[in-house]
Amino acid sequence: MADTYEMTFNVGSRDFSSAGDASRTIKRTLKQLGVDSSIIRRIAIASYEAEMNIAIHSLGGKIDLLIDGDRIFVETEDYGPGIENVDLAMTEGWSTAGHEIREMGFGAGMGLPNMKKCADEFYIESEVPTGTKIKMIFNI
Amino acid sequence: MILKDLASLEGLKLLNEDIDLNKEIESVYIGDLLSWVMAHAGKGSAWITVQTHMNIIAVAVLLEMSCIILPENIKAEENTLARASEEGIAVFTTPLDAYKIACEFKERL
Image 1 (cartoon, rainbow over the protein chains, first blue to last red):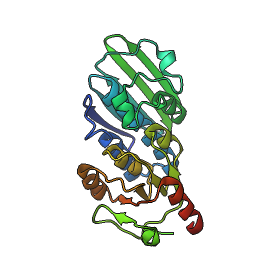
Image 2 (cartoon, rainbow over the protein chains, first blue to last red; image 1 turned 30 degrees about the vertical axis):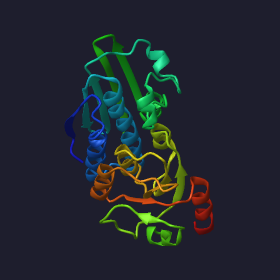
Image 3 (cartoon, rainbow over the protein chains, first blue to last red; image 1 turned 180 degrees about the vertical axis):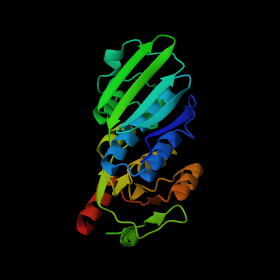
Image 4 (cartoon, rainbow over the protein chains, first blue to last red; image 1 turned 60 degrees about the vertical axis):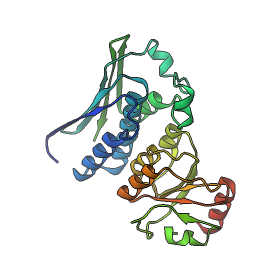
């Protein structure tokens, strides 16, 4: 496997027609690089949740994939509006998603907890109204 | 069992084209909350859901599901079916409800 590998994906706000594309590309790339399938599954779930969170809740943002030796980093950054109470947002079942989003099957309040469960290390920082940054590390 | 074996399921219709029907079905998962499905459904699942928008295809691809089955004659949106064909995910519909589809699988899996 290459020692370092880096990709960036832009995610549009409310862009549901292409939401999921970044995660699919990440998954495909890791498969081509020969990463273990159980690790790929965890990264695919976590990056999909991150991607959907940006599409649903933010004003847009980006996802960076970085493979560095024996660790894979998935980092996201959005352009606001930020999360008022991060502890609450990390609680399973808690969501600010509206009716229309819930009807599509999103807004279960499991996105952030799912990401944390999937990643070996999970860091989140958020500021209102600047935005939210998430860093997830996966050991290969 | 493989996708082809689903042909005997009551009123089953394949809604999209260019699908390899030799794909293996390993299990069945029923759910409509995408995050919940992402966290719990297994590889090779036949996924029964009432959701029809494009994101169900992303979920199915990421989890390497075998197919999506829409119960009670639900039809998927055109762009969902186009994306499903691009990704090689079969989308079926049947008049049966989710419970009856699961019962049918119990006989076959």
